[in-house]
Image (cartoon, rainbow, N blue to C red):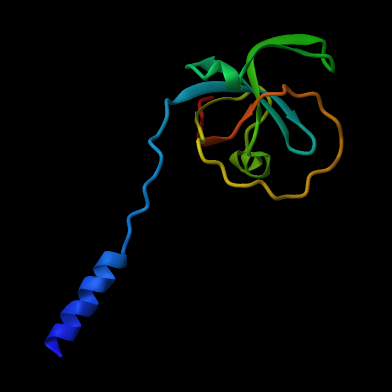
Length: 127
């Protein structure tokens, strides 16, 4: 009986696995330049470095006739609105290397956004 209990405890301990998380990336600073309808968000990088494959070095917004540098569309549009940021807010964030699938209802209003996007996490408003 004692051997069976030890075997059971050993099996249970072997079955426990620690979930490895991706290492936290660099903390970046950004500014929300578009907070449009239907979960359209655009961030302009203020401080930090993002892989050039994931950011637009220059982007022209024909809606307000403005050109921006170092911008990207928010990829986790279903949850980003929960941070409560408004257009013009400056905040810190990290790029989410493993974003969950985005399954939410989004209306079909067109808002111009950069073609490159990133999911963000750990958002903290600065001002």
